[in-house]
Length: 261
Image 1 (tube, one colour):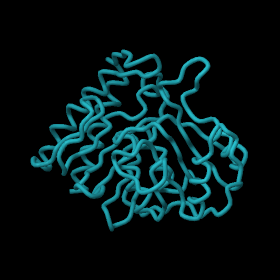
Image 2 (cartoon, helix red, strand yellow):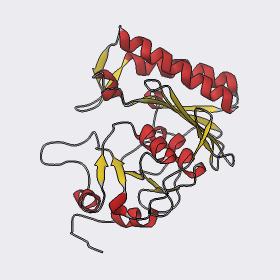
Image 3 (cartoon, helix red, strand yellow):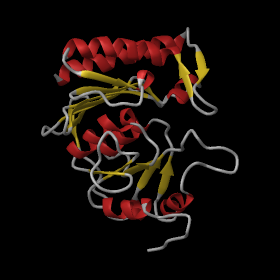
Image 4 (tube, rainbow, N blue to C red):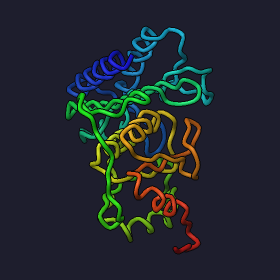
């Protein structure tokens, strides 16, 4: 099944590239979050394509989400992760596809059309980029690490919408912090070791599902943001190489109250 999933992701990526060259229509979901006709067309294509692969599976897509998980098994799809980047011509966005069997993510794929890089994993078979095996970071000291995070869309003047105590923890310890704008791609980069870790609190299933499998199959660790086992209903994620995961969870446990180690 994974070969069919990869092909579907690449075909959706081609649709997105074509629309980006001309014909993009942009509107707002809310004050900070955009949606384009490319999101909608990519999801429509993937719904048909993936249900052809497995007609008995449900479908959970970002643009058609109604707040309730389908009965498993079901596809978890972000047809365009990084829409704001896409709408501004900033080439950091991806297509994300995962397959939830009811107890775990069985297949995952994150495709970057701009770099022509396709990250994939099947449970128990490892993670790959363009067919080549990838491994997560082996860093043991946070001072040697590059991390990534994201900022929520519900931020406003006087309220950034995130816990600044957590950000302060990582800023004081890491070699660098990055904000790419595509959580799925950030997780893929953790899987291949380009990033040593990623954390973000306010995410949806389609942001995390494929990337979570990529990281674990690459030898890394993935937890729910609040700690414990990650699942599609987790409100966020912490992912990293295995040696620094405990330290990252210590960081996401920090609060504005000024907790210290």
